[in-house]
Length: 212
Image (cartoon, rainbow, N blue to C red):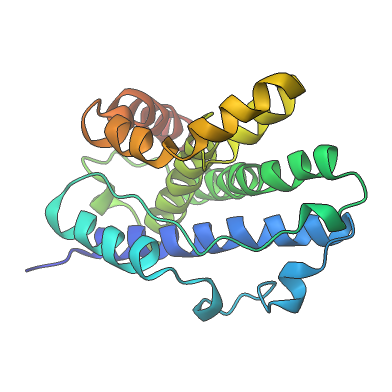
């Protein structure tokens, strides 16, 4: 089956972005006193320790080849809340580090793409110079990851916001709900088509920012 250049760029951007997302969880945890990720060798740009066979290879390749929504994740960076100086507060910062990293990368790539774009009319993204294609897709992937991970559904990072806001008395019910989070997430993606409802408008806004 033919794999287009855009698919390869998108896949590469996705893998790089999810790895950087996970690394920053570990970096912030280290900043607040937990060196678990560092001792596990996870604060590295070497992709091998971060690869999750299902989330980093099988599902992204399947999505790229079949056209179904492409989702991906890296192996979660280990964090020990008990080693943080203030576990409840600091875990919030650790969780938010990933999405904020993606938003920062998206902003940098979008501004760079806008600066490189020469303003000439285009019909498709394939009409753009290769560097602009890469930057646009990298910005788009990171915007998607940032927004996606802010969804308040376990195991996504946005669930940490809910968990920190809940009163102590509600936590047992929340912990019971967490085990069903991944099923809810897959249902929203594949049956409710959450990607089309949220991400397509974001893609269009990003394209207008870069290409005018």
